[in-house]
Amino acid sequence: MQVVLKPAGILFVLLVIGVALWVLLVPHGGTPTAEPTATSTPPPPLLQNASLEEPFQNARPFGSPTSIKATVQGEIANGWRDNSDWADLTVRYGIERTNVIEGKACQKIETKNIGSGQVQLVQEVRVVPGKNYTLSAKARASGTATIELLFRDFETENSYSTKKVPVTTDWRTISVTFSPTGKAGTPRGGFLMVAMPTKNTTYWVDDVRMFEDAP
Image (tube, rainbow, N blue to C red; front, side, top):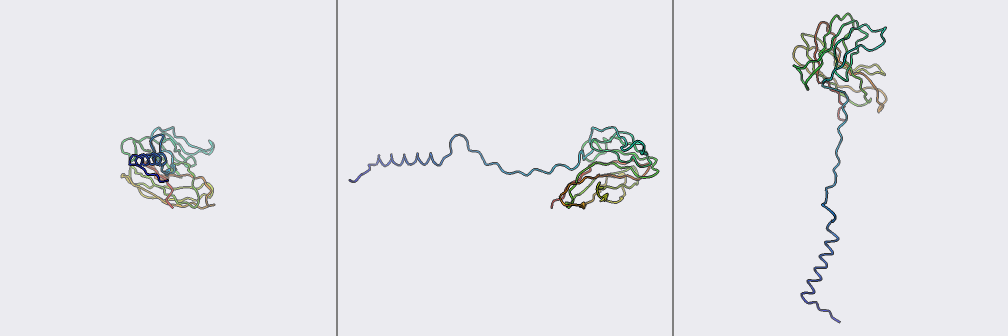
């Protein structure tokens, strides 16, 4: 038996097929959303309060009271501390809000009566042997002086340093790149240190940075 479809029947069949394809191929139940894209998370900062902003805290020497030689006074940026207790000197820390490089404040350091040693502004930080790091800071002084930026490893006592470099009344950027030795992949602690050996001088330090270099 031969079935002959009239034009109306053909239209009906095409309509049924179209509805079926629409149900199968078109998503329903709300507005389509784009697939989430993967984003990379930036590494955490290695230093606290790198731009030496307020609030500041009372500066004081650390170490055993019987071994402290230094007189440490004033206010020091949060996240930082003095490490000059072993030296024969007087230092006064303060807040500078006028001539700054980064943010609204920087650290002012007045060195006086240095009989031996040097003023040391430090922050404890952890590194991984085998990786490369860069330290940088901006500094100026009330006159011709020297300054040193370094990382000192607690375990090996190795120091990675800019050596002593001259600073004057103009801001200067100092930096050093290093790769700590030791068992690869095992984190270890140390001091990031800004060392100031020139007596009867006022130093200003700002924008101290430490970051891991790209491989």
